[in-house]
Amino acid sequence: MAYHEGVRVAEPPATGTAEPADDLLERQRQRESSARSYPRRLPIALVEASGSTVRDRQGRTYIDCLAGAGTLALGHHHPVVVQALRDVLDDGTPLTTLDLPTPVRDRFVTQLFEVLPQPLRDGRILFCGPTGADAVEAAVKLARTVTGRSGVVAFGGAYHGMTQGTLALTGRKAVKEPLGSLLPDVHHLPFPTAFRSPFGLDNGSVDGAAMAGRLVEWALTDDLSGITTPAALVAEPVQGEGGVQPMPAAFAATVRRATRAAGTVLVADEVQTGLGRTGDLWASQAIGLDPDVLVLSKAIGGGLPLAVVVYRGELDGWQPGSHAGTFRGQTLALAAGAATIREVVRAGLAQRAREAGRRLTEGLATVAADDPRVGQVRGRGLMAGAELVDPGVVDADGVPVPDGWLAGKVQGEMLRRGVIVEVGGTHDAVVRFLPPLVITDEEIDQVVDAFGAALHAVHAERDEEGAR
Ligand SMILES: Cc1ncc(COP(=O)(O)O)c(C=O)c1O
Image 1 (tube, rainbow, N blue to C red):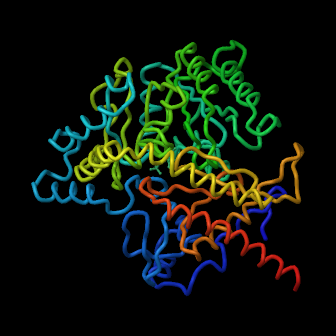
Image 2 (cartoon, rainbow, N blue to C red; image 1 turned 60 degrees about the vertical axis):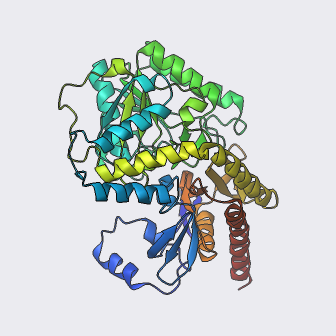
Image 3 (cartoon, rainbow, N blue to C red; image 1 turned 60 degrees about the horizontal axis):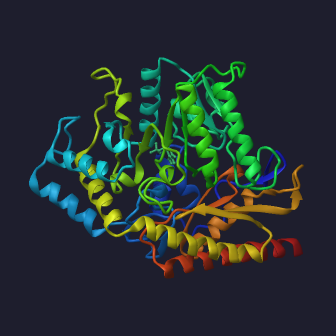
């Protein structure tokens, strides 16, 4: 068992989870970089997928609560996406055009603008490189360009990507520490977490959110705060990789007020939350964050790589060519993305995510009620998490410490039971659920059952070890 700062952490790779090694996995292990991550904890090689399920080479089927880290809003191979891709291949539209317009690109922009919150609907769109990190980088560049300032404020627990700029904004220290200096002039403030309040207050208390809000106001507007007035404040409306931490609406209101007072560009990173996942089309709109800039990727490409930055028209201070790149809107991704946006709206999938998310968190909470190792179940819509704890060890505030070891074990046991989940949060102790928005009630119940059974199995295994 591995320990870090007195807390049990997952041992990579989680042992005992895999069936006999697959030769694809073995060749991957030999040829791909040691930076590869998911196959270590989820040692499966996939050959087929449909809806919310994937099938591996041994013919086993899994419910996919990872879904490309929350990318696949419509699940795998949704007919509208498949048809949109076929149409492009059949009609001969060029697949790559840098940023030259095509009818496919035009339709994507029209489709996205139709569903954006005001005032972004009347704003501008920038196509950047196709990943979420590319889009966050572009948003920060835009804010710096238009304000003439350099500082950026981000939050503890944030995840914005793995480039050297976005890593500077990211919370997790372990991935930053080996690199030395990153983007300069970045400052982190505490996020009002719903568990383990950075202020040692009751979990999820209104006071915790109010205190975090006061710190934002102080940092941005007090002339002695020591932080030169920032160009941008970048925030996730629900922190995902940070362990599923929803931003309280009252805090969002304070952030909006403070950034407005400071002339700081408010950037909402909706790479993971965007397009219905949290039970609303846009998570930032639901909590009244009202951003100046919206960063989008994952779901808006319908499973293909696509990222954009949408912003208020008055911020359009770029010089021609000042943000370029080869893959600024790839045709297949634009077609898949437009079809996905249309279908999410047509089928009311944001509302469906809200209902399905309620069923999921209620199910997880039922498991938690009988098991003190589940410290908290939380989330919005189909972005849910269960933080696992070691009930026998409490921190200075009397809160049980996170148990990343247990979360790793549960992830492995769930895989054995045909459910793929992610882990994240502090010490990777949060089991995360990000299924496609089309997941059925029956599949949700299977996920909940697998979670309960996995916890039970780890308990039984530990008892056996203890008896030896
Ligand atoms: C909120 C958020 N921002 C940015 C990113 C980075 O996206 P990408 O991995 O496509 O660079 C992610 C990825 O998970 C994310 O969740």
